[in-house]
Amino acid sequence: MIEELLDLKYDFVFKELFSREACRPYLATIIHICTGIDKEYLLENMVLRNTNIPISMQYEKRSSSDILVQIENGFINIEMNRELTKETVNKNNYYISTYRNREYEVGGRFISDTVYIQINIDNYQRFKEERFIYKVQLLEKESLEIADDNLIIYHINLAYLKNKCYNELNNEEQEFLLFIEHNKEKLEEIYKENSEERIVVRELMKMWFDENMILRYDEEQYRKNVQEELLERGIQEGVEKGLQEAKEKALKEGLEQGLEQGLEQGLEQGIEQGIEQGIEQRNIEIAKKMLEQDYNYDINSIAEITGLSRKTLKALQTK
Image (cartoon, rainbow, N blue to C red; front, top):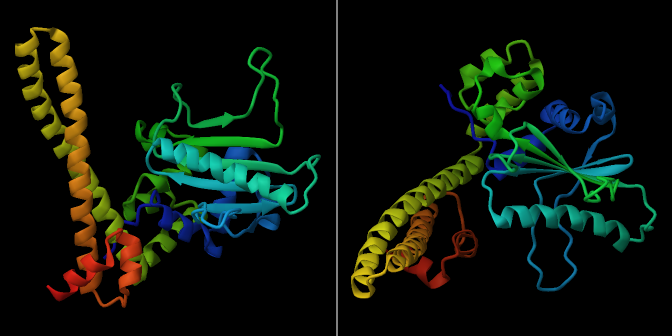
């Protein structure tokens, strides 16, 4: 019996779920809560669009956003952000700006009233003040006048929900419990009066019977566990190495500064080396798993997924 649902915070689970017609009402609910756009209007008018980011140069890397919805007077890009990194921030800025630029590249006029909205569902608190929803726009610093009416970015703070009991949340906040609670029975109890969310729970259950989804989910779970282990090991090794180098440097120079610098340098080197070694071993384990399972992955596909060379993969095949 299935007790735990797939984690919606993984991009590919998020994309798959909200691409399903059965989850259309829940998608409209999320957009309504953030933007205030009428839900009935969204259900009647929103259209899912291709999320591939257009490329303008021959060697530009191909990428795709999570969800892109078109309405009569604009586009809504929805992104699931599991970790706060500089890459995540820059990537999301790139997505919404590229979608906007595309309008002009295909002949749009610069007086266009098309509105571009991005909704970031963050598995962390993005800003200092604790709130559930943040609204970001370009403003003039002193007068706080809006400088651009046609670009609006929202951030949903899932960390806000984690710090509260379920019965402390209002109705809108409870709509997002699907992102942090994975126990099927708990969710069915929370949403026993709400058929819309129960449908989403049912669709997440169905994913357990999709072999390709589960293979990818296992890989992501394995990747996450390895990264956490590497980080912990890297920090520990870095601290130990840093302390030793700091002691040696402090004894030699007789300066407190030597202890601080040695600790910082050793910590940084330890983390970096541990992560590099662990990532390579992780990719080898993933490749072995894909070669052993009967999923008909070819060498080129495995090389693209793991980053390992074809020579290495062929050597693994012969073992």
